[in-house]
Image (cartoon, rainbow, N blue to C red; front, side, top):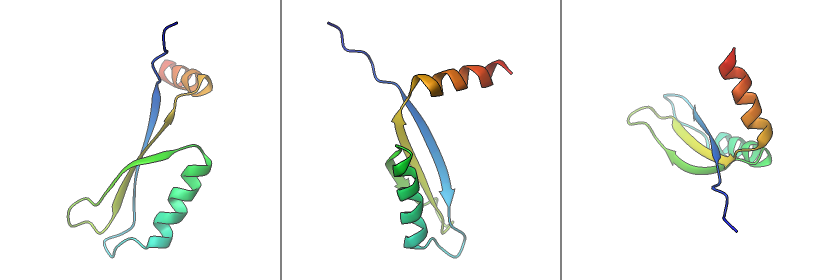
Length: 74
């Protein structure tokens, strides 16, 4: 039996402003993403921006694969 290679989809979003990013906003974003099946794999602050960028992944489903195929064709 061979193990199928897991495929992922990724999401990247920068939140906040030059005045900073409130912990409550970060937590709300992560909570929302968590309910959608996303797992944060990296969080960083672009230098001097006051914002944070969140990188997340989740297993690529057959439905998401079909949706991508359709959008690439149009």
